[in-house]
Structures are given as structure tokens and as C-alpha cells.
Length: 457
Image (cartoon, rainbow, N blue to C red; front, side, top):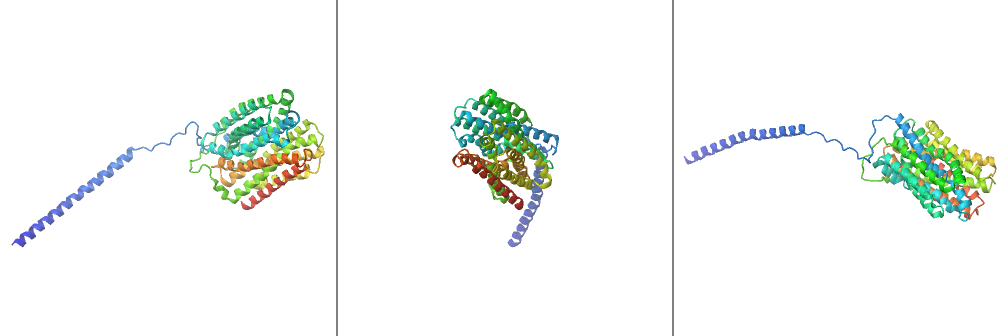
């Protein structure tokens, strides 16, 4: 009897448990359903947070703007004007060097005076990496404006410091080049972002600005030095630079906004054989590049027995031919290819030094050398940024070009001082042949590395 009662009690307890389980299941399901409904309602009420607007100093993306448009050509014109004064001053420094050597500092060796022009181009390239980083993170209009202001102040201060060579090296050389780097990098990198089919021509027109600047700045500087003195020549140039660059910088806008990254500078590109060929070729090319610009006017005066004005006219011819060459090679590159055109231009530049300048002292051959060298060396300078954009794209073109211009820094710091030292110590300030060979051989090596790039690419 007791067992029957226990069995009945157990059955009742089990039935109660089952009933509780069944009654609890709908309650849990109801709670889950209510929770899901609450989450859905919350999701409907939450709106996506808009991306933070760029701060006043940051670049704004203009990817919606069309390529190969009128806006791109406005940027090309602005870049051409800015390079007209930044690189134009570098290309016309030979006029100042001739004056310094003959009148202001006759006891100073040429190698010492050449440091001013060397540092103008060398330090400008050395600061290519930080300038490229700034262009990725700061509005390029602001970067280029600050660069123009620094250049102007450097020349104006240099006009009061012409009593010692070291002061000119500091102001006209180093400080000027700091500002020039902030103008040079955006001017040569930004146009590639706005063009596809006409990219080589667009960049060619921009870099032709340096030749145009040297074309008129050389005789203008000579005239100002003759009639007003070197001090006022520097002041007037500085004032013009500030005025023109302030207006031109308003148009220098980047099309692409670069996303932030962990590495400030990505050196992995050095693992690419193509970049190594470009880098070494640029080192060799810039090592030999400036010898004709700095030494041909002095060669014409000392060896050819020509006047100072004739030597400056040779410099003017080089800049004029360079202007034509930089624009013309940009168009030729559409048919021959950018790398092929750049390598061939470098080869012809080296031959103009070794074939036309080295063996002769006649007036005609000096003029011929100036024309041929100016026309084809412009292709070497103008097509480098285009080749970089073709091989590695335009997204990070500013920092890639900044890395490349480190090669130009090495070549410049080796080239012009070495050429001047060879003239002083081996040529005894009268035999230019060793320095001419030095320049021509390095340009020839650059051509060989660019042809190797063609094979690797």
C-alpha cells in the first residue's frame, strides 16, 4: 500500500515538472522575441555617423572631378609657374657664380662657390621625403604657399649676407632649398593624379617651367647684377617669387586623399629591382647633370676667350632648349614609351658632353653642345615622375617621388662639388677636360641603368 502511494506521488511530481517545463518554454521564447524586437527597434533608431570633415589644414578628396579636365590643366599651369622660380633660380645660379668668382670672391676656389648651387638642388631633394609626407597629410595649397614664402625670405636675407661665402651657402643655398622642396614635390607629383592619356605631356609642361625660368631669369639676373648689384638682384627675385607663388599655390590641389597608415615612409619599394635601377640611374644622372650648367659659361670665358655675356647666353640656350625638350619628349613618349624615351634622352645628353664639348673649343661646337644637351637633359628630368607614376601608381606618388629624389640628393652632393674639385686640383683651374669626362661618363652610366629598367619592367 505504501509503495502504491509512493508511486502515485512520484507520478504526480513528474507530471508537475513536465507541466512547469511546458509553461516555462513559452515564457523564454517570449523573452527572446521581445529582446530581438527591442534590438531591431534600436537599430532602426540609430543613424550612421557621418565621416568627420577634414580639418582646415588637411587635403580634401576630389575623386569626383573628371580626369584630363580643365581643372587639371589649371594645376599644370600653376605648377609650371612655381617651378619657373624654384628650379629656375637653381638653373640660373651660374650667373651668380661667375660674378662671385670674378669680382666678389676671386680668391675662393670654384668648388667652394659651387656649394651654393649644389645645395640649392641637393637639399631640395634631400627634403623630398618629408615634403612628400606633408603633401599626403596637409593641404598641398598650404604646403606650396609656405614653400614660396621660405624661398622669398631666404633670397632677401641672402642679399644682406654677400660678405662671406658661408652666409650665402646658408641662405641662398640651404634655406632657399628648404622652401623649394615644399614647392617642387607637389608641383611634380600632383599633376599625375589629374591625367591618364596626357600624363607625360602634363608633367613635361610643369617641369618645363624650370627651363623657362632659367631662360629669362639668367639674362634678367645678369642685367640686375650689372645695373643694381647682386644684392638688389636677390631682393627683387625674392619679392617676385612670393607674389607669383602665393597666387599659383591656390590651384595646387591634390585629387586623391591618402588614407593613414602605420608606416610613415614605406621603404619596401627598395626590394623592387625596378626601383633599384631607377634609383641608381638617378644617382648617376644627377652626378653628371650640373657640370654643363655650372661650368660651360666659365669654360667659354676662360678657354674660349668669350665675354661673360656669351657664357650667360650659353646658359640661356641650355634653358631654352630644355624647355622645348621637356614638352616635346612628353609627347614623343606617347609613342615610344616613357622609359624608352627617358633612357634615350639620357644617352644623347651624355654624347653631347663627350662628343661636342670634350674635344672642341670652337664657338659653334659650344653652341651645339648647349642646344643638344639642353633639349635632351630636359627629357631625363621631366620623365622621371611620369615613370614613377606608371610603375607604382598615383595614390602615393608624393612619397614615392620623395624617395626617388633622395637619389638626386646623393648625385648632386657628389657631382657638382666633385666636378669643381677635379677642375681645381687636376685641371688646375684651366683644364676642363677631366671634369667634362667625369660628367659625361656618369650620364652614360645613367642611360645604361634606365635601359636595364626597360628590360626589368
